[in-house]
Image (tube, rainbow, N blue to C red):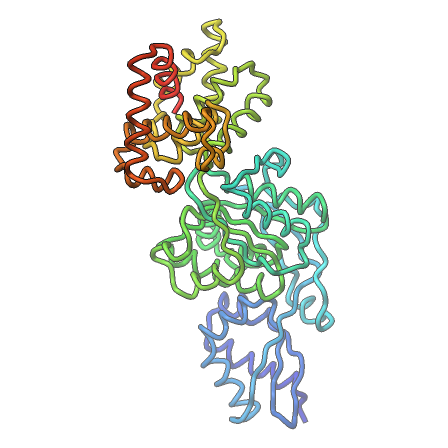
Length: 463
């Protein structure tokens, strides 16, 4: 009487006769026979990954069941068990791309059921993280406080899966790449046994195409399924890349199923991503969506001060305020303008002052003056008169508060084109008549006092 193991070998012989050698070697030699239940007539097989199981079901299901019914009987049931391989080793491909080389099928078949994965030593694994981008130099502000807090929680408590996957989105240049690198760096520092990988969506696609061309798709999939924390930057670039998305879908499923952390960034939320299947977009929203907003004026100011300290520059406070108020809301552009000021200062042997900064911003091709809002103007007025938002918006009739309030009304009417009614609503829920009165007072004072008029003009330059 033949054993269930021998019957499975007969199934494999039938399957082999209907496939070419490469198909059989790739998809059937790695399968291991686990058991056969004579009562339930259930065949249990080992497969090396979730992706492997899904691929078999999608591409070879009729062929497998044909063989099972022929050998075991028409009422046979089939179940799979995913088994992680212990002794996978990392090797370098010719293009420098790390790949996972699986052990021979015979060793896989002899592996004990349910064997746990042993991580490759961190010294043998390249994370591709930027270790200069950390939480220590990621300046916190209202625009990034929530994503930063969530990112720290992910790095500090990898066993918690509340924020898995973590999907961070926001406009270009707002610090997404810095934040995800900071998460990866801290995770590696506190948990050195973790395999943390940072990869851009573009590089992931290039690697996948290269793997397909060289018939190494299996290596590619297995490598990515071995990661403990996968960070993919700019996933919006997957849009329309059907084959790449299919591979990422299976990698995502495997990692999530096995409790591995997935972190992604995008320049827009999942609902706005185009040319992606709904099943992929749904998975993006499984965990935590965190928006990283463009830096407000205070955050831009704080980022500039850090950059100035880092580069050892001597830049006056009024210059920092001017750049923070006028440069487009983009951290990369802030860094670029600081480097430009340093270069101009060295080449021309000049100290950096307000006039110098104006020339640099106007000469810089990336400079574009922002469209001012009432909130922007209030921010500048509060800083100039050293009053708080609460004091400006409040009901207190102290002279310094009234002056700041009326200046904000005057400048808002001049630079935004908003109605007096809307300006009054924003600045403390005041009436149309109050705004008109405040604007009239400032205009009158400017006519009567040339020093005050000059002060207002200087304030406008800083907005």
